[in-house]
Image (cartoon, rainbow over all chains, first blue to last red; front, side, top):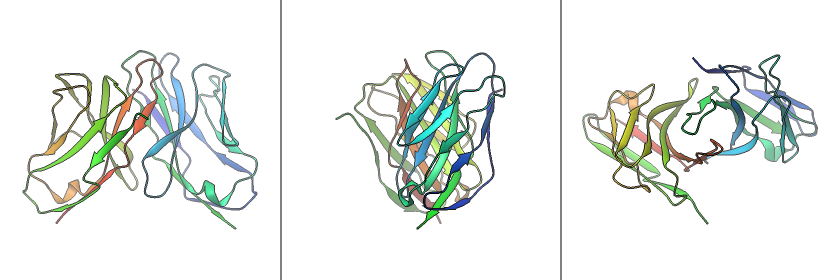
Length: 113
Length: 112
């Protein structure tokens, strides 16, 4: 079956530090890949996505590249801010109109001033 | 703007009581989902629906039921609440063409 594995957390960084959050997946075919973010007290919202191999999704300074050869979709940001403190979820959706998303367990990022 | 709303946002109930969590979306999406979020488990799928009168079990469906009588609503019912069902519940709907999920703000349920 499909699965998503995220690195263990939580992660604590100082403001302006470089961020990498690892995500690897197992799926058949060519899934779409997503990063969702959950700010405190809120629901999840889409941060970025990639729908095919070598695509790079980007938003709010975050980037992730769909690497089929390593089945990975690592999230990076060059300089984190306090406002980036949140829980980050990696997810995949198999191909097909009625596909369900499979989520990783999420990782909490805390950025200190 | 289109949105997805959940109610109540917070609920405290007792073991054995029936509880219904409401979910209403104005995206006109056919696909709707209920997840629960627990520390150490991430998001787990409870039930989902691909359209009116369609319902399907997810990975943690025991003790929960849903019904879909129209496009906009997918209420989640706990027939007899248990303490193990204390959690934060999220409803979501998805764009069929992209698979992107749109989430509600969550309902925090405490079962005493």
